[in-house]
Amino acid sequence: MNVFKRILALLTLLSLLIPPLCACNEEGKGSGSEESDKKPDIVLMTVKDYGKIKIRLYPEKAPLTVSNFKGLVAKGYYDGLSFHRIIEGFMIQGGRGKNAPTIKGEFSENGIQNDIKHVRGTVSMARAEDMDSASSQFFICQSTYDYGDGKYAAFGEVIEGMMVVDLIAAAAVNPYNNAPLSPVIIESIVFVEE
Image 1 (cartoon, rainbow, N blue to C red):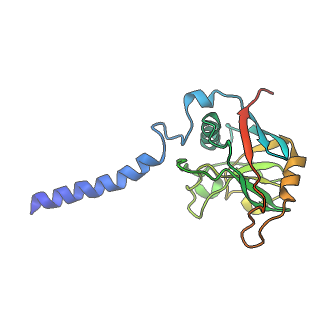
Image 2: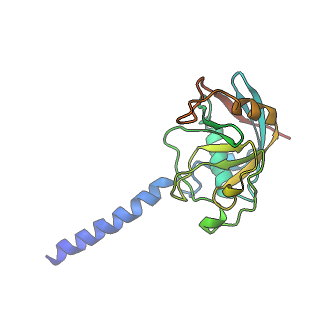
Image 3: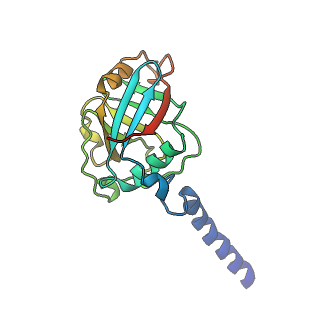
């Protein structure tokens, strides 16, 4: 009986340890790597039939989030995905895919200092109710979103192409789920030099 309790205790301990270990790569950086972290802090997103959006990333403000995003960009993860949620006057949300690891939410309500404000052009991670549930989905603010400050991991800003964001935000959507009636496809996101 004593051996049985020890085995049960060991299995319980392993069940608690294994899920967190699987959530991130060995460095705990989501999809990031040393190689992708060395890429430029500027990306260029091409959105089919809409145009280009240039984004500056801020690894000094949200290092884990930027590392994860850069890792996904380096793998071509976002190529062919879409902006699947659009709320005009608020934001456009994209990057919903599969098998992206979750990362710790880098915002003050989760115990991490991040003073990037959610103003027009801010790029931030989308997440579920769980503060550490962000993975690949991001949103671009079309207007100021004070409620997001301290609650979502802002990690970049649009430096060129807000007119494209405005065009996407004006797309016709299903009023019940804010999904665009015609797909808004991210053709690619690539690293660029300033």
